Image 1: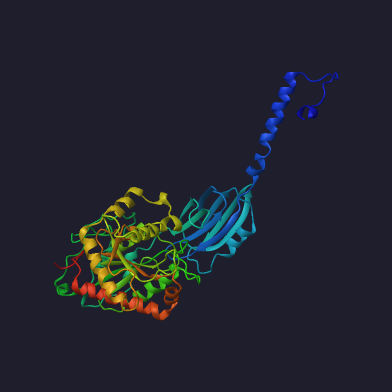
Image 2: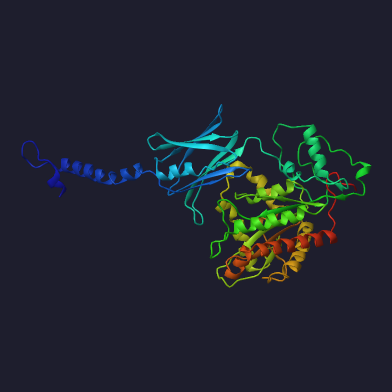
Amino acid sequence: MVERDCPPASDGALPSAGATRRRLISVAATLLVLPVLPRLAQAATILAVRTWPAEEYTRVTLELDSELKAEQFTLENPHRLVVDIEGLTLSAALNDLVSKVRPDDPYIQSLRVAQNRPNVVRLVFDLKQPVAPQVFTLKPVADYQFRLVLDLYPKIAQDPLIAILNKQSGPDVDDPLARILEDIQRNPVTRADPPEPPRVRGQQPAPALPTAPAKPPSTASRGKQRMLTIALDPGHGGEDPGAIGSSGLREKDVVLRIARRLKALIDSQPYMRAYLTRDDDYFVPLHVRVQKARRVHADLFISIHADAWVKPSANGSSVFALSQRGATSAQARWMADKENAADLIGGVNLGSHDRQVAKVLLDLSTTAQINDSLKVGNAFLDEIKKINRLHKNSVEQAGFAVLKAPDIPSVLVETAFISNPQEEALLRSNSHQDKLAQAMMTGIQRYFTANPPLARLGDVS
């Protein structure tokens, strides 16, 4: 068939064997190349676009059927972020991204999209304030395909110490963090804060911020009751919905509601205040949750979740503490693996922080921290069993990354099984959310009554 397609020689004779072989090679090469060219020219398909605006940062996500490259730069007067994405052409999905910019977004004023050059789409974000952007890609995981992620952080971030000190302590309350804030305001710093070294529970910590030396405690502060700081950690958020019940209730939503109710109870106490590691629907990496709690010198860390299992019959509440010697059960190990995978689903930019620093932080723990965490967990179980069946009657232990603050008693509460239709209905109920918050509040009070907090920076010895 190939010879029939070859043109005859000019003199009417058949082509020579050498000429035929050369034509065969040429035709074969053409057959090999032609099917490849359309694939190279085909643009990637956008599967979904999402925005997650929050005070802490705004995330923009493009989910695609293939991995793409992007370059970004910022402009001033006015402030803009420009992102060039290779392998894309204008589409209805990109126009949909423009409509997803919310008026209350703290960072994005508006978004413009254009075909900058063949196969390259340009996104121009008109900004409300200067940003320090992070642009990175994520491989397929869980229900997501390839993702291009744009995180818009403020160029000057608010320190969590300032946010937590919105609650002013009374004159009869000793508040070391307030004295730290006073020093910050008197001696402002412009350089980046160095990472706070881990400290062992009971030892004198290094200051959380590079400030002037703390003032020695005055005689007026002697005998005062110290303000207690409770870090509340609603699990998941943003790109990571957590477990989803049969009616569509998402874990990330219900645990945030419970955390807000518990925060209100804590803040109503004269010697307590609560700090939320996540106060809106956005993703927070596991190691950042730990760092936030340590940054505000939390006396207790409570991570709030809603359990899920492959069988809808599983039910009951559970409380977990950290283990350094392996999980106490196969289910505890499975649960820790599932919760520790949140970073993969939520999407962490591994290039944005020192991996070794994060690894050291998450590998550190102390026997004292675990012992105190077990006491907290037992107090919680005693109260939660009054309003819901317990899945396990004792505190379970496993290697949860979010519980690895070396100096803060830390527990993870699985409030109920969202995969169980009856318990999902309870979790949706405002009254049951109140009961869960009150049970944890009573557990907190029981723990601190029996275990007064150790001295911290600026405390009177």
